[in-house]
Image (cartoon, rainbow over all chains, first blue to last red; front, side, top):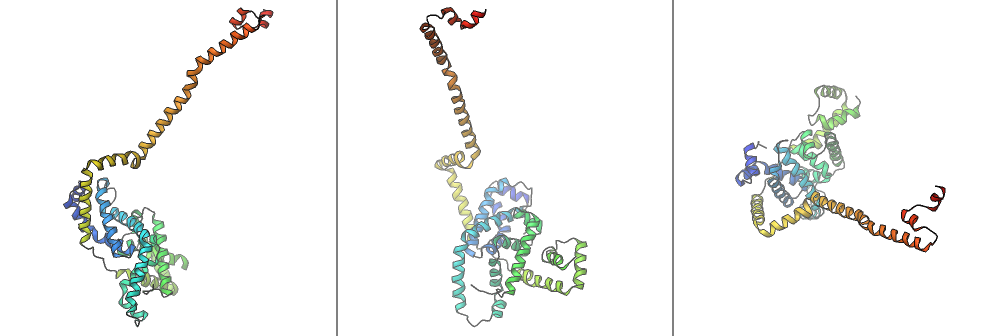
Length: 187
Length: 162
């Protein structure tokens, strides 16, 4: 994410819509990306993105530049996405199952290898959904957003050792999934 | 360092480049000698790092910004209405500002407690008057008792000895 000028942030804090739109354009990409990776559903990700930016708009006055603006947004995004994901998880699972069943009914002859080769996006989505929410968010912030341990710890309001522990467990789980042959589009 | 410790470092700090240079050198020296740990490192890279390097950034639909703008405008208009301002004040007092409610409740309890403590003191003159009446009645009922000593609250025993 490119840096947002402090003057833009201060203007947006005074409810200047143009300044707030600039903030939105710079940061909405990664907010939506995190929301989508955590929830696994595009509609839910849009709701989460909307909620995050409304929270940013209401709380900009309270932001005192003690941390970086980017990690402040990451914190709001991660918390909102995890809460929303838990709330919608049962509904989402039913919808994903239905979509998966409908999709793969038309292609029964694809081998496991072909599925893995041709649909890496879906593989990635399934991998992430197999992880626990707190492990999933750590992997996303580390591997997709490129945050370091300190930034992840601040975003999740935890300490570096907890981040390290969650990353380790997430990666062990991913290795086990591969060994058990779950790197597919299984329901 | 044993293989277990090396693998713990490989799966976290090493692949995330959060490792100190000296420790990194120690790990790489071990990897040069240990095939099992080299295989483990490759397993970590292939299964937990590479899949995410190919991850595409998701694109936000434009409709999201329109919804955000609309919500902000709606909330601004709501705040201007007198009904909303009254609701906000009530929320402030009863809901969102708990310390105010707690302080008010605490003050009320203190005032009530002080009121209860003071009630017996107000009744004391009545009690004193009752005791005086009983003493007078007692003196009247006892014909041998001297009225003066009753009035002075002296006892017959004291007077006998004095």
